[in-house]
Image 1 (cartoon, one colour):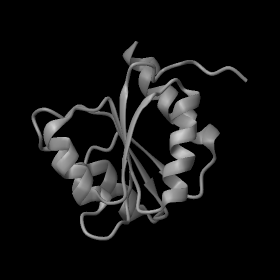
Image 2 (cartoon, helix red, strand yellow; image 1 turned 30 degrees about the vertical axis):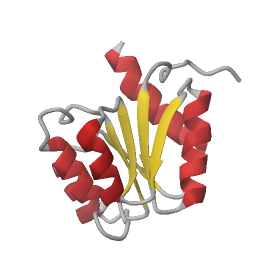
Image 3 (cartoon, helix red, strand yellow; image 1 turned 90 degrees about the horizontal axis):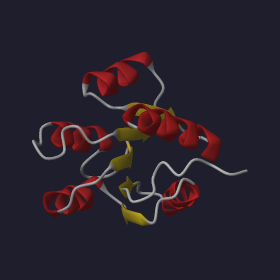
Image 4 (cartoon, one colour; image 1 turned 135 degrees about the vertical axis):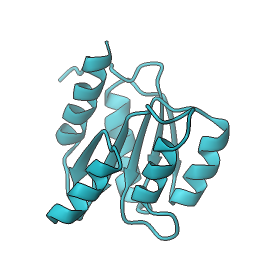
Length: 132
C-alpha cells in the first residue's frame, strides 16, 4: 500500500525510553517519506537536542524517567522557536484527568498504547494534510 509522503523533507524527533517503540515509530515514519529522523531515549536528552535544532514533528512518550513527555511538551510550547511544532504524545495513560492534562498543555494529538502503525499514520496524515 502506497502512502502519502507527508514527511518528505521533514525533520522528526522520536522520544521514548523503549527502543522497540522508537523502532516501530521510525519504520512508520519512513513509510510516510521521512529520512531525517532523530531519536532519544529520554526527555532530558531531547530537550538538549531541541536547543540547537528545529523539528517539523515531535513524537514523544509520556511516561519516561527524568523529564516526562508532558514536561517536555510544556517546554516546547513555552519556546518561541518550537511553540507551533506538531507534538504527538504516546501514552499508556487513558484516564480522563491525564487526557485533560495533555490537552491543556496544547498537545497536537495523542495516541494510546498499544497502537498500530496505521493509527500513527492516520494521526500524522491528519496533521500534515491540514498544513498543505
